[in-house]
Length: 473
Image (cartoon, rainbow, N blue to C red):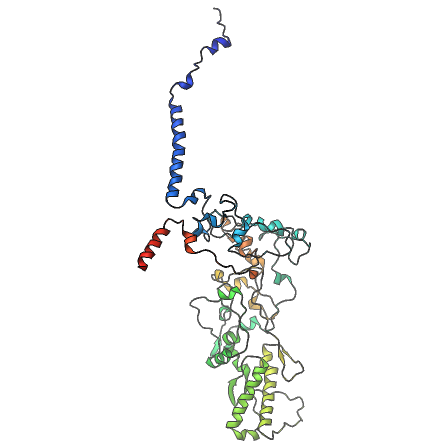
């Protein structure tokens, strides 16, 4: 059988050149969809305009919790002169947040939006990625304008290449000038104001503003508090930590010490009062007032010996005690004896008494640190479920004031890791403890919007205004 020969021409004659004009189900549905899709999009777009929220059409996602109220007013951040499709400029952020620079030495200032990424629905815009911090701090020395820094120049993250906390790296110890022995105060059967006691950490150390907190167990009585209320002692520093529960309240004699140590400020068996816990000038005037009142009520005391609370070895035992010739001399001798007792025994028990060559000594300032880590944040209230000495492991055995008792980084790393909840641990990224902006230099910002401008595009706002108008009538 002879094989049939096929050429291109013969094959081409078999093709239907009018195929595109014939009906076909697939082409029909493709045409219908190409018409229906734009029509539905147009209806959706018109619907958003009809509801009063046209800008929601262009939103790339929900705003953060702090900015969610502005969701219908895109022009507040996406400034009109640039069009709201443009990226948010720094001047839009600085209109409400006058955020100072990180440091004057930084080689560049990143745009606000490079770190604080909106339209992700995040609860907190400060939860930034670590690489935004380590891009400079992993090699900080070479990225500063002057090339020098007092900070650690190589930090790669909390889990790696993070130095020990600064107070534990330095060798100068605790700067406080109050003589405190933690070991002695935490012993069993310690002499308390009403018998033997076993002190706890919370007897002296408590966060501010914690609700339901009991009274200080070793505070002074009403007479001590009355004297403290008129004292010239300075108030607590104006740190933001005193206004919340993050940091511990400052140690005060009237709250934590007076219950046990009032007797150390008593000076004469004839007078039950203790001197105020205050400057030497205040103590001196207090003694003058008390002895003047006493000699006026007991004139016969002019011929009586001076009965001090505690015997003081005389510098020269053979030297006779001076005999006062009048009431003024008697008052002077009594005050001098009481002050010798207080400066050399009562005050010296806890304070460093510095003789300055004048009639009255100088008491070294307590200088108890309000915050040990001024460049980081720590929240004691967030750690209230933990025992104090599980982190402050050295406190119970500390006998020296110079001991720095804050926990080290190894203690924090037991719970905090960079992966945070993803690795079933507490948050350990940079933002957990550090700020980029130096908020202590923040400048106040004057408001420029009213409620109508912020919420006018919200669908429920007109009806709310109508209800208020009816109520006013």
